[in-house]
Length: 188
Image (tube, rainbow, N blue to C red; front, top):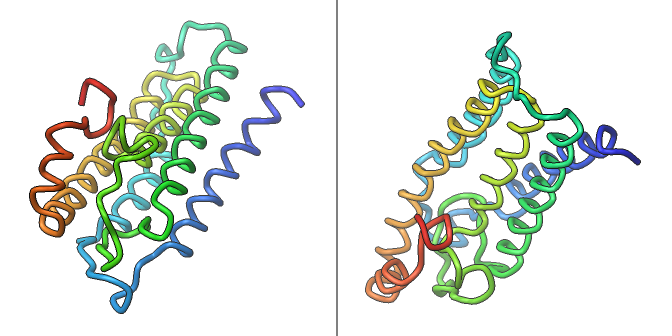
């Protein structure tokens, strides 16, 4: 199997995984306190819009000046890395992970695994996947559309989620915020 035939399997596998995650891990009111403020829907709408728009904004002259094969391999490596990071983050949280922003009574602040490195490794995995999808387009304008718009939605989601976690865990989460970067290790 070559890079060109492997991409659709990984990309649509990711889409299917996200749909499964949204259904299987959604917290209901009887399971916890919801704080989502519509962020799950916002993220889905923005991702779908940006992926469709990426094909429309690809204009002549904005093609990436890298060998086609190099871009395919880079996109494959990144999507696999993003999937690994996202899945590892979800597995680390276990039953505490929720597709919507919610706090469960059994939930605690986790500082193990990838959560020692960044506070939101699950979103970091998504960001890596967005970057991979943008690179796969071989077009700078499409890359910007596929990466920037969903990133804005994810940053809003992080803002809502951190407010809920700070409210639920107080000083323990505030300390975690002081000692661990939000999304990019050592940077942000």
